[in-house]
Length: 213
Image 1 (spheres, rainbow, N blue to C red):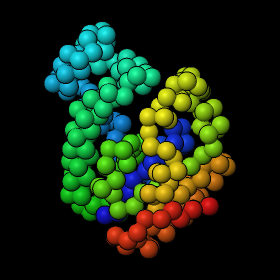
Image 2: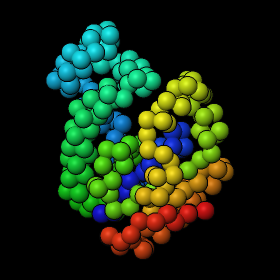
Image 3: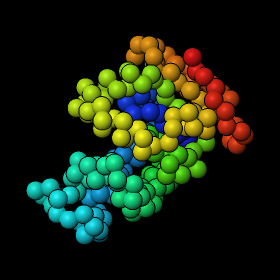
Image 4: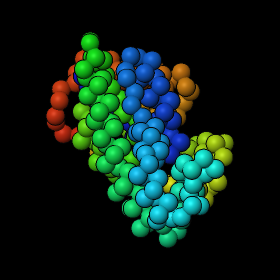
């Protein structure tokens, strides 16, 4: 079973690439969804409310991700961001490991599993993967997509500054998929990547970016 990690800049089209891999037959695990589940755990809710007060709770007593984001992505929020990551990342990794184990135990197991995780490198989850796919898109296009999602330019910049530089992520990836053309073009590139991975994958080896287009 080949395990891929999917990374990329904010609004690069990473989730669309994940959907394309799913259409090819891959099982897709979503670290963000695992993070949502972690934030619903009672002891996590209690720890965050104790540190930040009831302002991070919604009307149902659940964690408001919007309010948490205001705290950890503030100009002086580095310490709070580290607190959140140290609390949540190990639990997210545990969930991903459990999902991988469950997927591997299916009969027959899928040929490919893709882990969609914006913070794959930052959290160290790349160690779970055989290959890393980096989805690239121009910054102006990514910003435009983020604004269409309701983000401000300032929010986009703050989120991006909180992650590893894209050049560093690209250097540590195996495969580069450029999301610069049409959606159909991206699907074609994913299809070619899929065929190449299944025919040539060998565990281990040095990591180097190999552009798909």
